[in-house]
Image: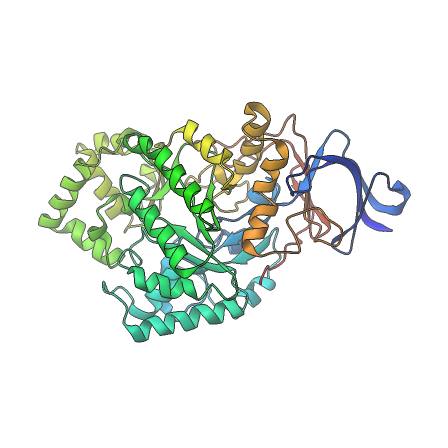
Length: 520
């Protein structure tokens, strides 16, 4: 007997091959049979997928459920599970929850989440994975090691290069975490505690990934006017270390920079044709979800939150920051405060509106919002070209990822980006409506290809013997419902989600929590 039998499925197996009509038999968490016809009497649970597509469970390779802490607060991860996401990869953009060489290391997530009341009962990566295994998870979870954790754990808020001895310690910590199951290393080169990292420091760390063949994920130093230099740095780093490279949430922020699109694509494609294993992830929205302090000049936020707030309050340095902001040509009416822990009156208002309410300039308003929130403020910025977003998605080198976190359907005073609820259905809708990709290649981007990059050989495709992570969806109605004003809305068309062989979600209702910890 099969635990679950799926009948009449149009199967997109993740390989990129055209779909075929098959029945699937699942047993003991794995795919046991793929046949033209299986006897429905042999299924304990029988699902009729007539006129529906069945694919591997979607893998969200760029996720922040750790740094927003929802992995612990809302472990069912409904907003992700309801999109068809069965596996998430956390520890991105230089910040992870392990290892924690010192108490300062956990501060890498404070730009996204308030640290008050957090219960941390681990230090090593192995201990972190053990803690995760004690939680009933809605999705499978794997993690990278954040560079900022290692760096901040050794030098705290100091603004300096690491010593050769400290570099050795960082490499040892990374090697240990990789042995304990970490999937790779992430860099967040735009953020305060990594902005001063030298190229040699980064190469030394990245080389540690080579022997276990684990990958490097890079949040570029710039996504605006200096993006070409930032991309060159990441490509040179991967070449020097001889490791695979994934660029995190690739985008061109600001209308003034959109003309650089062709040069970015050419650099990426040239690197690929020269033999570099390169990819990038992208989300299907025309707005970013950014930490507000990153809009300041880099020197202003070196050394962390306390130094940033001190400089903002200093008369001379404040004027220098404002002069810098005036030169950036930010579209302040499109920058919307999404998260304001200390002053909810800012939430949902543009920087322009905040400035009007305060009777001050847009530049002063940015500094006032940062100060009022002790540095922890996050904004939506409608600064991307939708046309370019779709061209990025259609690139053979791209993956689709949320760059978001998993939430429940409950409303919160602060706003979250709709990509937390709608990324995959929105992408699938664009595939169906605009034909930006054939279905078989679209599914590969969110299943087999991220699994390959992660080195996961037991999931990501529909094949006998692999883990039974599956999605049944209706291609005619699949769509996102979440928007910026009301983001906590589940998508339509994702009918059934199976995680490790168990029906975890059906008709938008969570039935079981069967996620596992992924390690390599």
